[in-house]
Length: 434
Image (cartoon, rainbow, N blue to C red; front, side):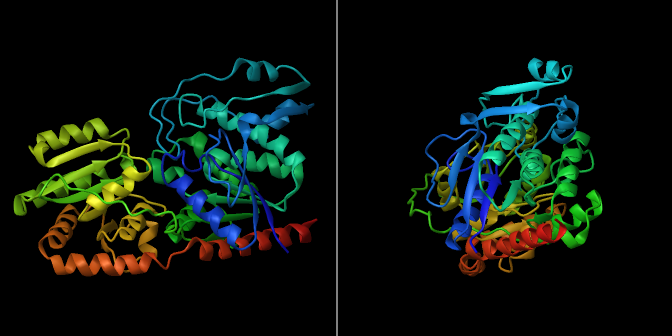
C-alpha cells in the first residue's frame, strides 16, 4: 500500500539557509523513489521549487477558515508565547522583537472567533518568528481538514505545533523529525519556550525520528521521551544534482575551509585557534571561514589579535553553487562542532573529494570511517590533523578518495526505506489504539 504523507517543513531548495532544507529535499526524493506521495507544506514558497518528487503547498496561499469555540483550549495546543530576543532557532536569527499580533491577543478575550483570511509568511527566521510559527499551526489545521493523507511528518521545532494541530484535527499519527535540539543550539543555556515546544511535540508524536544516536540520547535523557518510540535514521547526501564546476584558484597556497553557521554550536573559535598553530609550522596556507552568525564579529577580532588577517578570509554566507565552488577550492575541510546532531557539510565536502576533519561530538561521526575525528576542544589535535593533511599529499589523496567512495554509498533512498518503516509502524499502532 502506498503511503501518503502530509509533511511540514520550514524551507525547501532553492530557498534554504542551512542543512534542514537540504535534508528535506533529499528525503522527499528518496521517498518518491519508493512510491510515497508527499504533500510538503512550507510557510512561503517561491514557485521555483523542484516539485518532481513532492507537491508543494504554500501556506501563504491557504485561506484559513476556522471557528474556534473554545479559543483558550486551542492556544494551549498551539503553545503561542511572547518571546524575547534570546531565541536561537535552527538557523540562528540574531534579533527578535517582543511583539505579538494584536488581533491574536484580542482573540483570547472573546469566546468565539471565525478566521477567514490568508497569512503572508516571510518564511524567514526573523523578528516575528514565533508569530509565524503559531499562524503556521493555524494554517496546518485548515490543510489537515481538507487533504487526504495517512501520516503527518513534521521537521524540527518550527513545525511541531503545526504537526500537533494537524493530528488533533485529522486523527492521523504524527511523526516528528529531530534535526537539532535546543541543547545543540544553546548548550545548557536553553531557551525554555523553545524547549517546551520541542518536548510537547515529542510527547504528542506517535514516533520520533532522530538524525543520530547522539541526538536520540538527548531526546531520551533530556526530554524524558520513551525510548521505544525514538528511532535513529542517519542523513545522506544527494549526488544527483551535483554539477561539474571548474574553478581557477587565485592563490598558490593551500586552502583550509570551515563552512557553517558562525555560532557556539559549530565551534568556530577552535578552528581559529588551530589555524594560528598551523601557520607557525606551515605558513604556505590560507584559512577560510564561510558563513555568518552571532560570533562573526568576535571571530574577526580574534583573527586580528592573532595577527593572521592576511592568511584568514571571511566570505559571509554562501548559497547554491558558491558552496560547491568553495569545496572545489579547498584542500582540507574542518567541522569542529561542539554539538552537531548530524552534519551534512562534511558529506558535501567528501563528495567533492576533499579530505575532512570532524569533531567526535557529531552525529555524522557515527557513519564515517574515512574522516579524521578529533575532540572539538582539543585544538592541538585539530592543528596536528590539519598539518598532516597539508604536509603529506599521499595521506590527503587517500583520505579524499576513500571519503568520496564512502559518501557515495550514503543514499537518501536507503534512509527513506527506514523512514517508511517508521510510518508503517506509527500507522499500525494508531489503528490498534483506535
